[in-house]
Amino acid sequence: MENLILDGRVVAGNVKDRLKERVATLVNKGVTPCLATILVGDDPSSETYVRMKGNACEKIGIKSMRIHLPKETTTEELLEKINELNADETVHGILLQHPVPSHIDERKAFEAIDIHKDVDGVTSLGYGQTAFGFGKYPSCTPAAIMEILDYYNIPVEGKHAVVIGRSPILGKPVSALLLNKNATVTTCHSRTTNLADVVKLGDIVVAAVGKPKFIQGNWIKKGAVVLDAGYNKGNIGDVDYDACLENASAITPVPGGVGPVTISMLLKHTVDAAEEMINK
Image 1: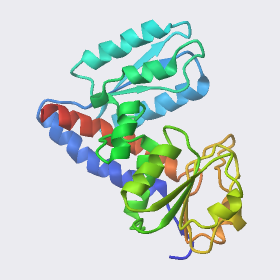
Image 2 (image 1 turned 30 degrees about the horizontal axis):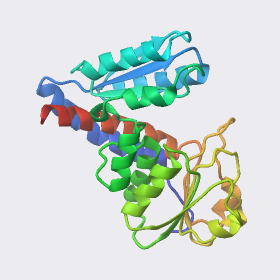
Image 3 (image 1 turned 135 degrees about the horizontal axis):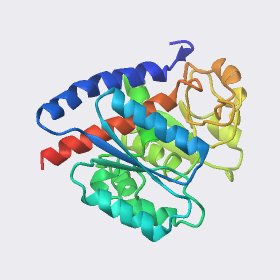
């Protein structure tokens, strides 16, 4: 398995192919899975992400409901919209695009999303359920990392996984998912002493630090599996790809690695939620 490139586009395509059949089955039962995306303000990057997610939905038969609110929207008005979507039985998933304008209480807005519709894994309840091992919709990027490992039959049990990053929707939940798969997990961050030495211990290294080319090639032990969840300006990951490729047995590229699978996990969770609703 020397220098295996973990191709996220292949993994995402596999997920979407399986989802198309499930969507068709739901439609035959009179239910079209629906993802509502809320965008507050006019951030160009956010607009692009929302459009990409909507297009991905429509390609496999999921309805995309796009809600664009002005940047002046208050926290209370946003909560009102979320509660409206919570009550709408035709909506199966709700995604609030991050970031929202600074005057809005983003955490309060995330927490307002019904747990059964939290397909992006942003609520504290969803995170808690993920950590306990029975969460239905973990955050999409951590779910994507696990999907890539699974698709390529990369063993997790008994391995030492080193996660660099501790954000509530990436570093922390992926650490929990790896732990639940019986990996031994070390979670590192900006204040970790001798970070390079800790990363060198990893059989599986997850880069989720948000700094371009932060992880150096000589930090990676020979034969380690490297998953780069970073996406920085200029299509650059958190890993120095060429340098890390020399030591890694398997590695995700940026772009074309974790990113496409993240979107496919959002679609999967929406379909899961639609199935869950009709089986109530």
